[in-house]
Image 1 (tube, helix red, strand yellow):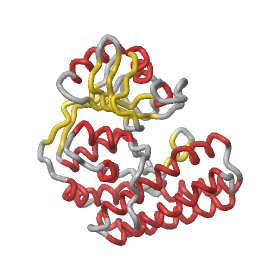
Image 2 (cartoon, helix red, strand yellow):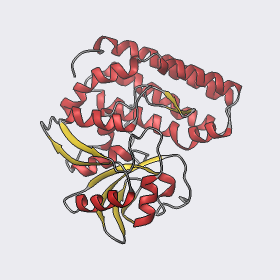
Image 3 (tube, rainbow, N blue to C red):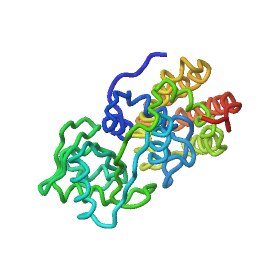
Image 4 (cartoon, rainbow, N blue to C red):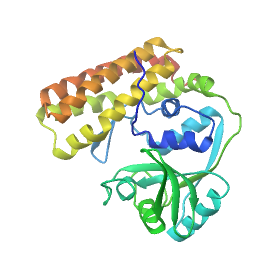
Length: 298
C-alpha cells in the first residue's frame, strides 16, 4: 500500500493536532477517533463512519487514548460565548466547533447553510472579529465577529449544546502515538462489531442499484466517498506495524471506495452498487478479524 499525502476534509483531527501543538500527524489522530471502522446513515445521508459514531465522540476517544484531557463548554447565547472565546484565546489556541461550514464567509462560495460541520483553531477574538487557522486550507483566516457567531450558532445535528468549544486541552499521561494506536484496536473492534455497519452498506448498495436521489449522490461525490477512502488508507498505514491483516482489509476498502468516486460522479448505478457490496463484504472480514479484541481493555 502507498500512503496518501495531500489535502482532505480532516477538520477536527487537524484542529486537535494544531491546538495540542505536539506534532501529531492528523492522519494518526483521525485513526485514533475510530472513524474508519464502519458506515452509517445520518439524517438519511450516507457517511462511512461507524454506526453511532460522531466527531465529538471521536475527539473524546482520541484524547483519551493519547492520555490527554479537555474541557468541553457550550453557551446559551452568542455574546457570552464570544466573550469567553476571546478570553480563552488570549491564553492559547482554542478548539472551536462544530460550526456551519456554509457560513464561514472567508471560504469561496460559502454564503448559506449547507448542513455541514467544521472545526477551526481560534487564535484571537476581539470586537472586530476572529483570527483562526482553518484546516480547510486557510491559515490565519479572519472573519467578522457577527459572521463567526452566525456560523457557530447554526445547529449541527449531532452536537449537544450551542456554541461549543474545547479548552484546557492538555496531557494527563501523554501516552504517545505508537502506544495510543496499539490501545485503539479494542475500540476499533467495538465500533466495527455493530451489525448496522455492513447491513447499512448493503442497503446503500440496493439503493444505488435502484438509482440514488440527487442529494445522496451529491454527498457521496462531493464529500463522503473521498473522506471514507482517506480515513481507511491512513488507518491502514498507521496500523500496519501492529496488524498487517487489518491494514490489508482497510486498504482494500479504500481502493473500492476510491473506484466508487468515479461511479458516483458519472452516475453509474450498477457499478456503484457492486462496489458498495464489496465494501460490505470486506467490512465483514475486518470485523471478524477484530472480534477477538472486542471488550479487551484499551
